[in-house]
Structure formats: C-alpha cells, structure tokens
Image (tube, rainbow, N blue to C red; front, top):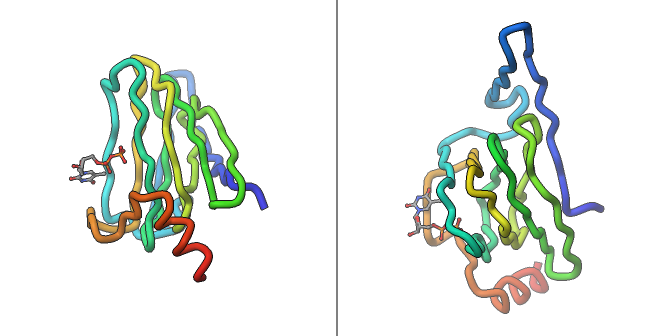
Length: 134
Ligand code: TYD
C-alpha cells in the first residue's frame, strides 16, 4: 500500500477564480478540531521528524510548494505538494519530514485533535519500536 494518500478536493471555479471548501465528514474524514499553518519558512529548514499515536492530519499546500517524506518504518515515499486542491492524508504512526519549502509556501494542516505533546513520537528509534510491537 502506498504511503502517499492524496485527497482530491473539488475546485469550485467560475469566471471570478477558484474556491475549495473543506467540510468535516464530507471531504475531510475526521473531526476537524484544529487548524494550523506553516509559512515564512526559512531557507534550508526541515520540519516534522515525528509521528503521532492517535492524531490524523491532512496537509494542503495552498500556496507555493514543499516536499514531504512519508515513512512507515519499512519504506519511505516522497511527494511534492504544490496544489491547493490536493490534501496529503497523514495517518497515525506515519513518520513524516518536510523539506524544500518555497519562500511563498503556505502549508495548512487540518488535525483531528487539539495539540497534545504526549501524542508525538519524536524519536525515530521509539517510532520503530512502537511499530514493531503493534
Ligand atoms: P512542531 O510540532 O515541532 O512543528 P513541526 O513538527 O511542524 O516541525 O511544533 C513547533 C512548536 O509549535 C512546538 O513548540 C509546539 C508548537 N505547536 C503548538 O503549540 N500547537 C500546534 O498546533 C502545533 C502544530 C505546534
């Protein structure tokens, strides 16, 4: 199974331009309890380097581009996000890293729960060990 799970959002366009609508349980398959966004990322910065125990997320690059590496402990796959109508589903226990943010990149993330540091696995060896015990 691919580690890259992209959701296509309908573009509701007309002569004025484009619009995308994100709705809980319509095109977003979880409770949207939090939205955060990453922008103004400095040159050479890489982010992420963690997995979540319970949290599900969808990342959408609504402006510019960035590169994701998704990792399940056995294999890695990467993808460039550069379209405002494509959402990358980040499932539980998916180690992810983000690279190569363009200066204009705005990455918006929908999350299934509130921020909780206890839900993070930030050590890669811990991530592997937890995965093996599942
Ligand atoms: P972090 O999760 O380390 O960012 P990334 O994984 O994208 O590199 O978060 C950076 C900081 O922001 C950290 O101190 C936690 C804080 N934070 C919140 O307070 N709320 C949030 O919703 C998020 C995502 C982070």
